[in-house]
Image 1 (cartoon, rainbow, N blue to C red):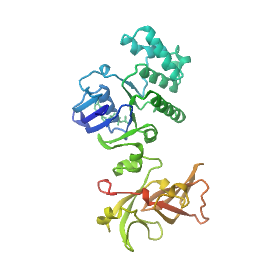
Image 2 (cartoon, rainbow, N blue to C red; image 1 turned 180 degrees about the horizontal axis):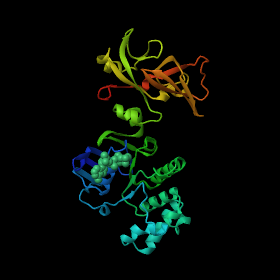
Image 3 (tube, protein in one colour; image 1 turned 30 degrees about the horizontal axis):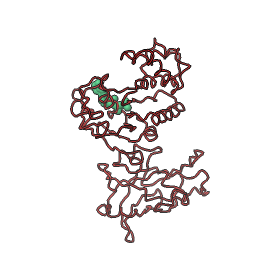
Image 4 (cartoon, helix red, strand yellow; image 1 turned 30 degrees about the vertical axis):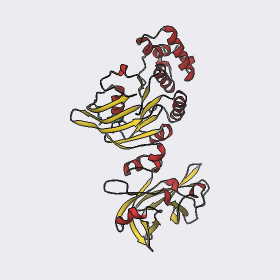
Length: 372
Ligand SMILES: Nc1ncnc2c1ncn2[C@@H]1O[C@H](COP(=O)(O)OP(=O)(O)OP(=O)(O)O)[C@@H](O)[C@H]1O
């Protein structure tokens, strides 16, 4: 029995079906991130777990107990909202204490809990201020503190970092990760930011139009996407996903990617994939490979793979400091390779690339299902 279980969950608002049969289960101490584009139903799912929205059909269980009929206050959860939802007229200390006071926790115990949490979040010096006298990052800490003092069974976070600037987001992200590591409490966290999802999650649930697309570890969803949507959604810069014709050349099955100038680049597929692509010879599929799997032929992380080398035209070169992104044109689309910072690019703009076919994926272009 998992700690948090969601079985066949449906949620409709009037005629609008928002969640369409969600099944998932996480263990105690897991960090589950719900990710997906705007409007896919992430917040609605979180709100049903919190008890802020009723369930149309299906069941939610926490620690084996059905919670569908329980009020939010009876579920032993604490939620942190994007808007922080602090009481503007109360000091930080009072904001932290309020929930405990409502539950009748004695003053001494309250003070101890507040002190502990304030230290943990480094907000001891702010306890007498009001929310209006705090920066965005400090408000966010207080909002987290208010959830932490309650020591709930589950924390729910709804896009807690989206009002912060880029640098602060990264800092707070690390802080949340550290807190989770030290507290070990189960977390369900909503974001539309796939980098946040990758860095925080022990398990990721990717939603689209109220349907779960994939449920797995960050490594699984990144390296083994179950469909075209997940492949495209996860990763920045995005996976290269281009049309390619499956061909048989000299007995080898491979994909042919149209080049801008001269014909097509033929990439034989990795071992074990040829069988799955057999039925597709002569037809077009969607070929996917991440930019970091198209790189310098002698790059260290390429050693393990089945490499196919080719010379391509660098149409755009983007040095980022740590790496250099080279954009070429394959399959009629822009195609990005990630090279070392100092990789040689020939004077006529050509560059030698190694395609690590061990890391390639193949999709049905009609319905986006994974072929291999
Ligand atoms: N109370 C409501 N009544 C009617 N429709 C609603 C209600 N709440 C949400 N919806 C609709 O449900 C869909 C999912 O909304 P939800 O807020 O869960 O999406 P989300 O994935 O969290 O999006 P975002 O990232 O933009 O916050 C949207 O189309 C939204 O308009």
